[in-house]
Image 1 (tube, protein in one colour):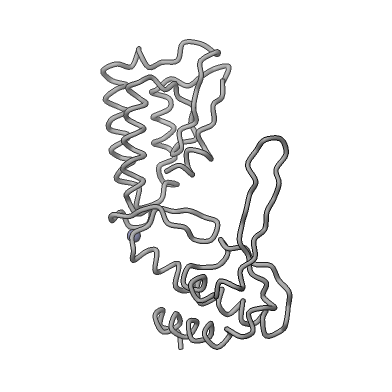
Image 2 (cartoon, rainbow, N blue to C red):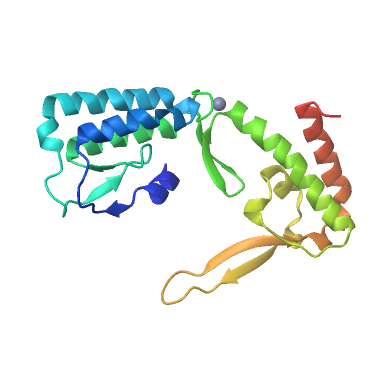
Length: 214
Ligand SMILES: [Zn+2]
C-alpha cells in the first residue's frame, strides 16, 4: 500500500504525544470512516493493539516531545512506533493491501484514473466499465468536434488505451529542477482520434451492454 504510506505516514513531532491507549480510543472512534471492506482487518488491528496496550502498555507510551511519531494511515493518529507496533501495523497494511476496500474479498491495488484502490475483480469492473464508457464517449465527442484536448495516459482507461494505435501517442517530457529525474508521460490529442471513432463507439456500446444501459 505504497500510496497510503506516501500520503499519510508523515514523520512529525508533537508537544504532547498520544499514549497508545489514547491512540486506540481514537481509532475506535473513527472506525466508521474506514472503507467497509477493511473493517475486518482493522478490527484485527484493534485486537492486536489492545493486547499490546494491555500487556506492554508502559513500553509503548511515548517518552517525550522529541520522539519521532508517525501518523497511522487508518486513524490519522500519532503513535510512537516501537518495533512491536511497527510489526502490528506492517501486518495490518499487508492484510489491507490484499483485501478489497469495498467488499472484503481478496483484492489487489488497481488504478482508476489517478486514484489507486485495493479492489477485487468484481468491484473493479463495477467502477471501471461505466468509467470506460463515459471516457470513450468524451473522447468521441471531442474528436468529432475537432477539439484539440490533451488527454494524459492515466486519464485513459486501459481498454481504450489498447485501441489507440502507437502513432497517436505523443510523449511529454518535464525537466525537473536540480538533479531530480525527468518526468515523461504519454498523451493523445483528441483532434487526432477521428479515424478511430467507430472503434471507440463500438467499445462504448459494449461497455453500456455490460452495465445494462441500452
Ligand atoms: Zn470487492
